[in-house]
Length: 367
Image 1 (tube, helix red, strand yellow):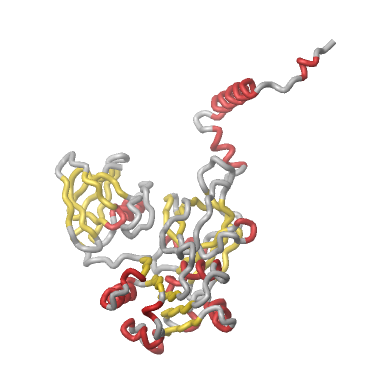
Image 2 (cartoon, one colour):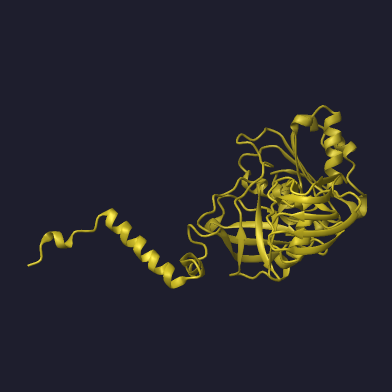
């Protein structure tokens, strides 16, 4: 006769020991790979796996832009409208990371997120996004980051100033804040009406009274004159302002707001860094793989390494997030923004931002 005790559920300790034993067996069978690699093949979006996203849809937008809808893995922690996400794509055997604004609401259907990117001339990743990605493909993700966001309690009066693809983080705010934003003005600069990303949606919001939209089409009217913004927005001084776009536009906005004593009411987001004139270039040696690259003075150490197949850490790629910092054991690099040269004697290990540093002669990067 079988006793009742024979049918009891094993204790947590016994179950844990059994799982550990089974995992060790799986490790032995899977060697030289980790069993997790095989689980990733079956369920790449599972909890505990490296964060990835599966492409749900790819749709064209105006102005050579494309929106990619993703279903993020179980580890995704969500985002605040206005933030961006780093996306990793394997292009020609090299994993390349770029940062893109999130244009979806945090409560989008199915838990999906979307990024919208404008194709950059000679841009390897933006071209891949637009031409190669298909529904079902996987991309690598980091968690959302960035502080170009609205406060929890939105101001009574808001002004957005955007140029080109600078409208993308603002679109995320507008889509998410329809019930929070009561008095909104958007001044947007773009080459033509047909090139305005989300143009139809923005105009529909304006027609419905959700915002006042001012479009500056540079092909017809020239560049936006920041000095005349008060004519377009008479109560400008009463508005909390968020600005995103090309460096020239943001430089003018920051100067104007500072002169007017309104700098504390201005929030800016820069996508690309204005570069100084190229330097002399030189030889970059990556000590971890003993890879040697000849790079010109206008190519960052990060881009030079990636082009040579060296897997490099990176983030914003414009000198803000410091995800790309690596030790320079010796040599010299030049800051692509300012032209300032940083040197290291043999063994120094001076930390440099590889995304905005180019070789200024020979240098050795510890990676």
